[in-house]
Length: 290
Image (cartoon, rainbow, N blue to C red; front, side, top):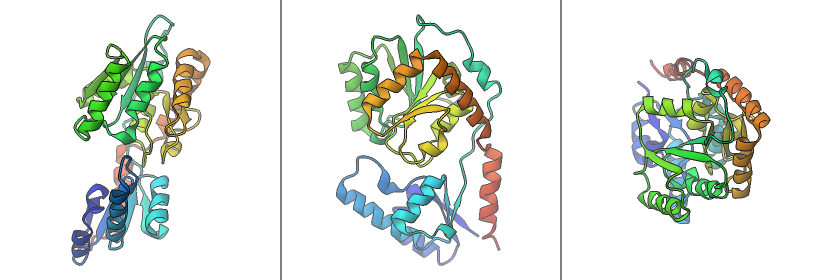
């Protein structure tokens, strides 16, 4: 019977994976290499690369969540491309996604930005706050949804940055919320923004597209593959000036906004459903069932 191990565990359990592989076909499910996480020391980065490389040597199959992750696995760990299959995460089909975005907008109403991602350095939340502060003269609000317990230091620094820049009445740190609450936020938002340094796929970006939300993001990792050019404005990771310009443009240029809404809606309709993704995943795993 095959055993699927998520990359977050597999990468730090090389000995256990090697022992298990003697009895069962091990399938690695990789979201993105651990060594590509932001904020790692040189020593920690080297240790993770060695550990993950060792673990990947004993697996029978690798399932990556994007072509970008598949390329990283080959480049960083010399995993044979023949060993890798790509299965995109699924998304829900949102009925009437375009209708949600097509409502009266004017310069008097605040523009509602939504950001979804754990409060960790890689997600670039502090950079986003700095960019939004530069646009304080415009009416906007920002809701940030994501786990605040993954990195207590980063969360504290983010809170300090918001307070220091005088944005506590504009930026709402919501932490982890229910699925229904998140759906409501997606429907009420005017645009999605996430300044990630790197993504192996970008689930939140894909969810935003499913709701017909224009995206502001970066070109880090697989985001370029996930967000088409006609669905969002992407800047280089860490580019604060580019982020400021993108946020200003999406708020002020109605033609650009409507063009991106149309593009996001088209892109969202092409994303695989959960049923399609599950069926593809199951077909790969079933090859190893005797």
